[in-house]
Image 1: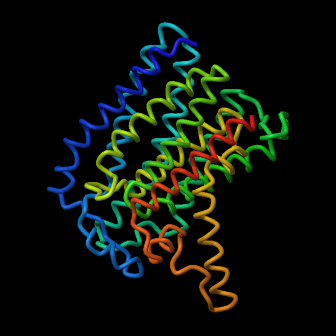
Image 2: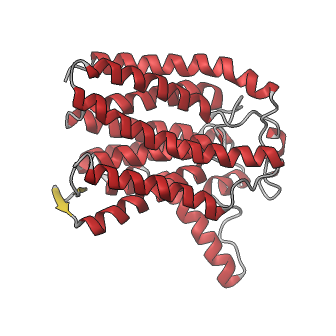
Length: 327
């Protein structure tokens, strides 16, 4: 595969994301689109109150612009590749829109509640279901999934495959959402995961994923410059749900949804930590962590935000390297 275009589109999305950040962050600040911190969150986060949020719009616009560019580039060369970029883009935008509505409600009412959990999950469920049905019945990519470490592919019945895909998408988006709790954490971890999936796409010559994955990575890295501690902007649910949608859609398209259990180890552990905390408190009245998700436990244990991000990124990198060997 000639990677010249993919490298160029990665660099382009990186630059576009930086330019958009420079332009949009002051607008968000002027509109007073500020973060509302949880009353029950770490006290150190109170000083972040008012930091511009909904910054995920920066990554989303960058991904849209560059994906359209990728579509136009391949339309005259390989039409199938151009067409297959579109569903990956649409599902990413779809999850981003659910996050946008959630963020907008939080800002409008000046609280941290946003959409009700039922409506938020319903929105994600609709998008995930549409994507699952589309890839099976329209793209005809099949219902096979790769089993990591087993060097085998299993073909599932459609009635099993579609619910599994929906479950993977809901789990991934919400896991990334839970990981988004301190400066730069979700963006950094997502960048590594997306890079790994893009490398896999290069190995198996899945051009549409190489292009779209490169765009997502470049957009994340450009945004990360402004999202690292001390963050000048937060991604909001718009960003975290969007990234979760992109990650899950790409993994599913590559027939590797099970691989997310390994390469997205940090978001998986973050989710488990929340579930364990809730179960422990409801059954015994005691908390097993100082605060959930796990990154808040380390914060309250005296770890600096940069240290948490660094350690979690190293864990993600190691998990992703193992993931690459598993296929």
